[in-house]
Length: 511
Image (cartoon, rainbow, N blue to C red):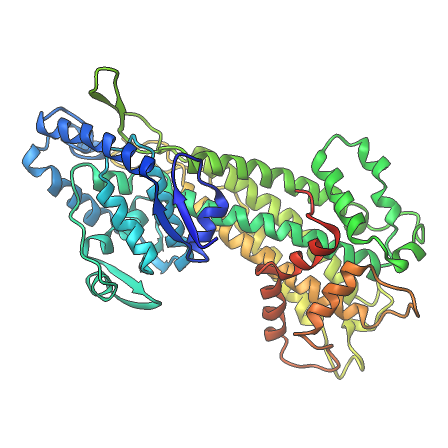
């Protein structure tokens, strides 16, 4: 996807990722431009007539009772951008900031925010010219402070990356051949208010959760071969009596991936009941899928909503009305991102247990830690430690933030959602899940090198992925620096190579 056109159709999570991660160009359709212009005309009329409108002719938060003159309406927007840019700590990743920016465009471009098309064109130009604001990502309640930091380079202030180099916002604009934007009435508020910060990150987290869960099914198929698993546990009749379609789909996916495996056929019924990490794989992956599906729906709906305040709603007489409310609340995002973290961690503990079973001589038929001459060589010993450490971190990050609240703005904002942090930690958990997948796949492939099954064939999918991994990561014969190997295998997963290899042979996996 090289170009994304914003029009009357709903924007997708995949399009957000295309822009944020893969630098697809952004274009506006005539219909998009028209609806933004109509909304802007209403705001211009409000300012001209000095109508009382929150954040346009009044102050913000607990300062809502303070009136602002039409002459100061533009200065008010500049002030909010500067004063709210106070997030601290480590900066967000480039793709996270870009996800926020494209979510901002879609949020303000719904035709009920009252911003000008020129503002959205300037944000689009930042994206298309690879100017990425420097945005510290800590100390955030909703996302006001991070979105303030995102706004500064747009107006020639703050700091930004241009083609990966950090410089002042003014220098970045100049290097890209762009000029600073002058905020008009309501525009600073629209850029800071609403849910684009949490939504942009939620899009990335949800997309990565889908990819990692699909990959985990592929790797689960490996475990049935390397652990002499009983494929009767995947019998469609068994899963048909559990009324969860995701579980049924996972069992079917794993069976398809194992199709043609002479090894799995040999060990069908080898053990009456396998350990849970094999026997319950479809059930556990299915439960994770359900939570991801629900998050996907909620995030997509939020992405295509207008979360501004006030909403500038057109009336039948050609005028409009400013509707003050709370569409900026992040309850949907916060609750579903909390659930997404829990679901991914649930899957992560399954992956780690399968990794341990292959490296643990008490549970497998393989040499200790999957290496020749154990003792002199530690082999995959510490790689399993890494898996355990990642799962421990995921468990901490799975503590829900949606149940907490600290009032702000002189108690005007008494319960707050912490939705931005929920999305940010979901991104972290998704990345750790990808690492766990990479470690398990590398471990599964190493175990295959010790299998003694004579001329019995692996499934075509497993053999093809084995060959893919071995084309970049050689068999571990003795201890070496394993970090580059793990990074390489993780790269094959995150790039989609492994999944594409599988789906080329068995068709698209159900999700």
